[in-house]
Amino acid sequence: MRRADGPLIRPEASPARREQYERDLVEDTRREQALLWKELACLLLVTALLVVREIWLV
Amino acid sequence: MLSTAASVGEWALIVAVLLGAVPPVTAILQFLNIGLHRWRSHHDRTAPYLPRVAILLPAWNEAAVLTASIDRLMTLDYPAESVRVYVVDDASTDATPEVVRAKARQYPGRVVHLRRAAGGQGKAHTLNHGLAEVLADDWMQALLIMDADVVYDPAALRRMTRHLADPVVGAVTAYIKEGSEPGSLLTRLIGYEYATAQAAARRSQNVGGVLACLAGGAQLHSRANLEAIGGRIDTGSLAEDTVTTFRTQLLGRRAIFEGNAIAWAEEPDSVLALWKQRLRWARGNVQITRRFRTLWFRPTRSHGFGGIGFGIGWFAVLLQPILMIASSVGLVTLYFTDSERARSVFMLLWVVTLAGYLFTTLFTLSIDPETARRTWRSALLFPGVVSTLVMLYTAAPRLFDRLGRAALDLAGLQWTLDRHSPLVLLAYGWLSACMLVAYAAKAVEGGRFRRLGPLLLAVGGYGPLLCAVTFASYLHELRGAAMTWEKTEKTGKLAAR
Image (tube, rainbow over all chains, first blue to last red; front, side):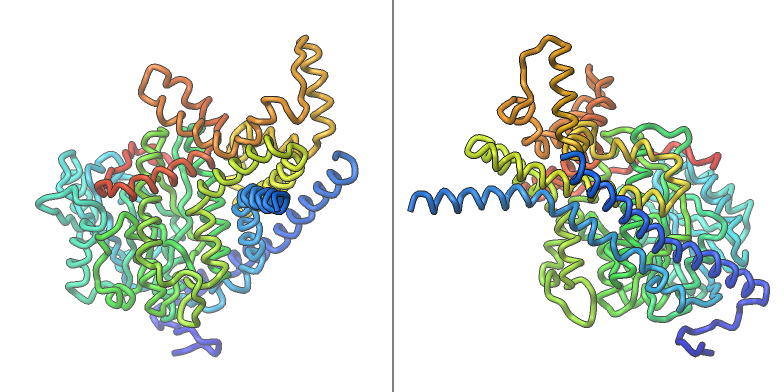
């Protein structure tokens, strides 16, 4: 059996296991998605510190 | 003519100094793609797949840690009938056989004791003994290779197997965290290092489509992948995990890092033990670089090892000691020939280093908040106290010049902080000197001055210690030192976790 987007779905996973899989996926996806915002925040902070340095500290 | 030569020489020195900026710039570029991990992590191609997993656990005198790791494997949130643990006892001389036999009685049919008649040849040989057994029947659909001291979070295995639902994936590795309780300065430094080298850098490699190394203590293979790589682990190098990783991907399968599958390991608690472990890893990387020399910087569609980005990342780590030495030699030479120019290049080098350090540290700590809570102080100490002070100085030079002068006046010293002072010369040469100081932390261990070890490590820095190990690995490879497998001592400090 093959999902529309490609990967093979093994038939042996029970409904409970499928639910658990979906829960894991939602949780992990949320965590991974947050990385983009964390990265932007870190970039912004470092850039701001460098600007402060250039203007006031050098 | 003479002035042209002088100018060329000066530019050569400036380039040498800026070579020291290659590692931080590479780190910044590498970390920049991590934000895209959600869309390039392979999660969209997973499925609820729970294959029958054989767990291969090599053990050489591991009685202190086996009970905890086997018990934890038995409580994995995974169908019990689909997990079998094969402990490959490498002719242990401690209580390992008794511990494993007791566990085999406690978990009948789920824990198997395999024993080699003669041991001590190294992990790869031990694994091959178990692999021959496991591949001899067709029960196993996937194989998890782990270390005896590693304990898995209950959800870790199922988070790894889901990737194998996609037949393109040949291997999956978990995020191994340092988990010794109680921790020490060294284990917390390792904890932070693992967050940056695994949780962050391996996500970046996922995005880039090529993984440099499957963790030796947590690598899951599909049966098809194991058979494709010959059903054996390479025994010809000290980096058998990296060879497996390369061969998996060179044969057209993907290797994935699953950062949400967590395993805990006990890492060395002494600089000497760490040095031996890392020297083995670093020598392994030198061997890999030579063995796969035809791959580097030759982009191809069939695998990612020839990519320019991957090559720069690989060599920025491998050559970091040389880059640091070149940089400080350039700076010290410029100090004597053109001190004005030396100061401006020094400031540029360290501002770039500061930016790289701030970005990679803040981002790493935000990726793994649990590790951040335990290790953020170690993150501050990671480059070493002196490097941190140099970075602080370059952040606000006028302020620190003023403070420095005031402090020296208060102390009644005439010593000035102008660009000809010995302190400046020390700062210029620090990128080399820090490796020597970090090496001294290892050298004093076990001797009369062993109490100085932690202080030297804090002053020199953990990063420079790893660079010193890498430099030592060149020397060992150049003189063809024997490839001995020195086991890292494990004491069971994870048991309570």
